[in-house]
Amino acid sequence: GEMICFTVILPYLHQQRQKARKTGVLALVVSGFILSLTHAVEISVLGSDLYSRSTFPLFVTISKVNIANFLQRLDAIVILSLIIANFFKTAIYCYAAMVLTADLFKLEKPQRIGLPIGIIVLLMSLMIASNLTEHFEEGRFIITYIFPVFSVAIPLFLLVVDVIRKRFGHKPSKASVEK
Image 1 (cartoon, rainbow, N blue to C red):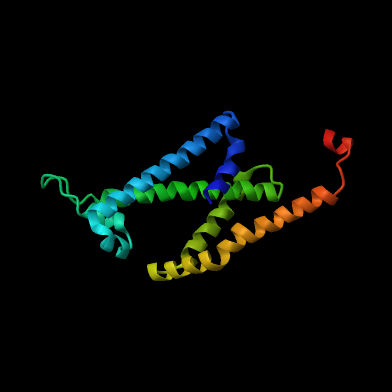
Image 2 (spheres, one colour; image 1 turned 135 degrees about the vertical axis):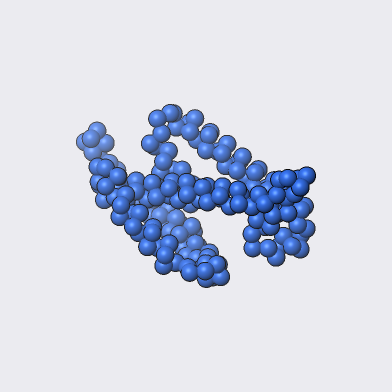
């Protein structure tokens, strides 16, 4: 998902693509390091047994913070930061969906498709899952059946089509290249 958004947004950057690509790779490496460090802290605080059984180990870890009987109950700040981060992640996904939809339907202004995309996201968020257990069940279904189709089958099909078109397809004429 993140790579799709990155490749959709990359052409709209004002800086050079090479610099943007380096920044994107650096962001992925730093994010991976931060996630690894966070999980290492969670495992060291909770222990491997409680960590493996916990639905939200970060929340349980933060609830145990007690610094000099002064800094306590930091879980509200962590939850607020997670909500803000998810808001920006959703906003970037919606922007990428707007750009891709506008490109697909040859619209000049992607902003015109913003309201329909927003309504679709709102309705889907209300319809998808009503509780956490249902959310996990749907996630398991998506990972088992839908993810392989979109991450393996369709890209392999497109690769085969591209190889066939390059091998047996017609060569573009000079007139079509100059346009």
